[in-house]
Length: 152
Image: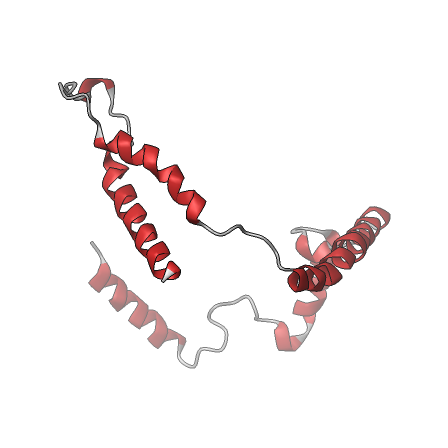
């Protein structure tokens, strides 16, 4: 029963929030509405009642078994493994000019390896988009026809 009433209150709060969204934004100076003569503001009354709904929510706390299980994993991970990996990567980066050259465009070692790769006959035409086509002329003819149909 308590869960159903909590859901009903949550749905009512969500509906009130959705209905009040339009009144939460401040209009520009030229589009300011004319002030109302009534002193009662239902949006203000609803927003004043919303903090009361937070008392109905259960406290967010970790149970005893969950805490022990997670701390057994997270404490060694955050205090031993992650710092050791970060320090190792930094040491490799500082001590070598060729460290992580695969991620740097135009690095001399990467360019040298690419040149060696393309000197191999199996990889010679790897960057050529027309390499491996059975009928190059037919492909170019179809490309021209498609361009003529799609031309603005």
